[in-house]
Image (cartoon, rainbow, N blue to C red):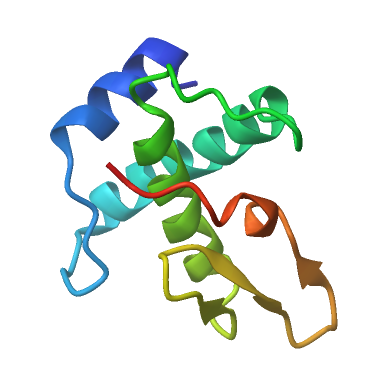
Length: 105
């Protein structure tokens, strides 16, 4: 399992780009990292308070965006870079929709 330190280090040296093609190993690692990022965000972000002092926060949001895009291909990409949308089964994705005012670093 990826630790918080591994996650921060990997995100700090990686540029996630939807246009690139990744190997199966890279894709598997990215998915693991993005799932961990999503859990990290869910555990640490409060609707009334964002952890702006955390240097990896913006990168974690970006990783969450990638994870959501892979798992929700019908989701809409909001102009400021956040993901929101409705899956074909009707579930509303709202994990990061409340945080649209935060910009990626």
